Image (cartoon, rainbow, N blue to C red; front, side, top):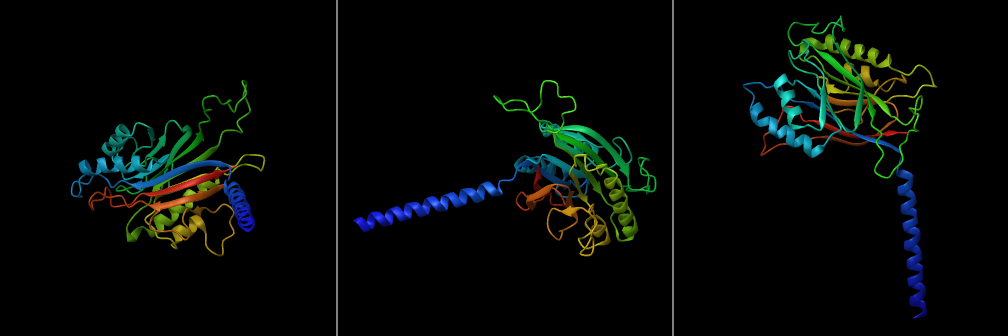
Amino acid sequence: MRHLKKLVSLTVCGLVALNTLVTAQTDKNNEEGRTINLMTYNLKFACPTYKPSWEVRREMQVDMIRKYDPDIIGTQEGLKEQIDYLQEHLPEYVVIGEGRKGGDDDEHMAIFFKRDKFRLREMRSFQLSETPEVIGSGPSVNPRMVTWARFAFINRPADGEDSPYPMDYREHWENTQEFYLFNTHFFSGTGQKLAKLNSAKLIMERINSLNRFGEWTEERPLFLMGDFNSKPGSEVYKTFVGDEHSDDPFSLNDSIEGGRGIDWILYHGNVKVLHHESVDYNVDGAYPSDHKPIFVKLLITD
């Protein structure tokens, strides 16, 4: 009996030690920061010959978005009717962005964001052309553009918690995490190689112009998403993320190592990728678009 008690005691001690080790490892891996779920999705424009039709696909898209519940969605190819439908049936989101030829004309480069999670600080767009500030510039058919925004997390204390801000919070914005998000859709076709490469260079110039002025300025993470109509390893891809010989500190990172497909979510800054998924959503083999959404869960670290 004495030996049995000793064995039980040693077993309990071992379990306590193991539990302590697991708890310590869990605490160590529990990094501080804010999580954000992003999705890029080429909606497939409401083409009358594409099957299933938009009238069928639209309900599927709403269902898929509700299942994954992204904080921000960058969409491509959506016509006004499509963007309006999604906004109406997803009222938890605010939508920004315009058509590629201005206003409601042509395919939209829209961004949907959660109204209760982010505040829009700034929103702009530019064309992928020799005259980026001229809306609709570029080729007369299928011009391309970028919509970008600066967001801030809304710091709303939970019931019973103190506000992170003092009563007079002027010049005390260190509690507000801001970030940039760019959404685009590159040229397609074999004859558009130069246009795509120059588009990538233009975007990198715009991104780099937003880099902090000095080390005393807080860094804002940046996300670039869209349909790039280019494969990993291409010159377009290397323009964004570099290659094995690159040492540019301003290069972007892919949310999946080595890249995959033509729809990407890239990032720069204090960001850690927690999950990457090519969403294989379908209803009885029917897909709501000719593209699969890319869904990424990230942690913006403090």
